[in-house]
Length: 271
Image (cartoon, rainbow, N blue to C red; front, top):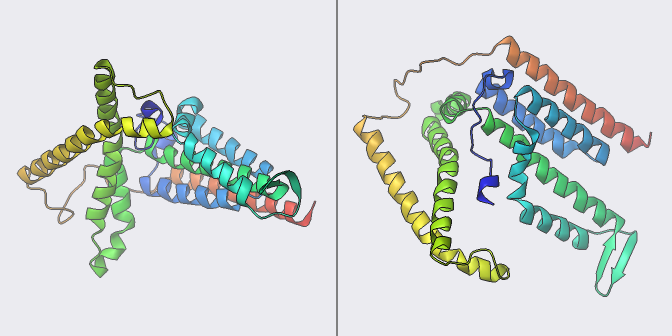
């Protein structure tokens, strides 16, 4: 399951999406999230999937690799589906079994909310897969620079967020090594019910957290040894700047959102 988590991983490449300004990619990711929340039917989700497929093709990222991140969240997706299926209000019953009742509105909400979660994860994964942690830090810092006048720690916050994303793959790799080492010593981590598996994970968490704290201490000492002083008088090898590629991507996203809005309007009026 650990190898299926793609959040925080960077997929090196030289595609047009990789060359875009990180600020524009963050803005477009937010716009895609808003567009997903505007979707009201299956046709809209089909359009969202086709748009995501189009962007993955341009970024030269295998769709199967992008969808691997959903496997790690299948429990959350299933829980979201079940909760909305049985506890959403509705007036058109489909199945009734004691106190449990499935309605058409509940089934519709269960499908839509589950798909929304899937597309949100895949959309945000596109950002981290095509943007290196260093570039992402620069983009976040530049976006929050106006808040510096209010003494907002923009650079520190951007650095913390990027370090957290950067160490997700490292922690997953270390967790996988610990699991394999414990399984080689006879530990059973894959059989039994959910409670038994949760108890079997406790010996995994202790060395994982110890290693995480040790790595954080080493990173802090390394930054201090190099006289790191935050964003004050900090220079960059490459200055950020918008290009025609960024504005072209903005136009494509605007056309996609307009298509979602128009399609939703047609559905609303019953055409």
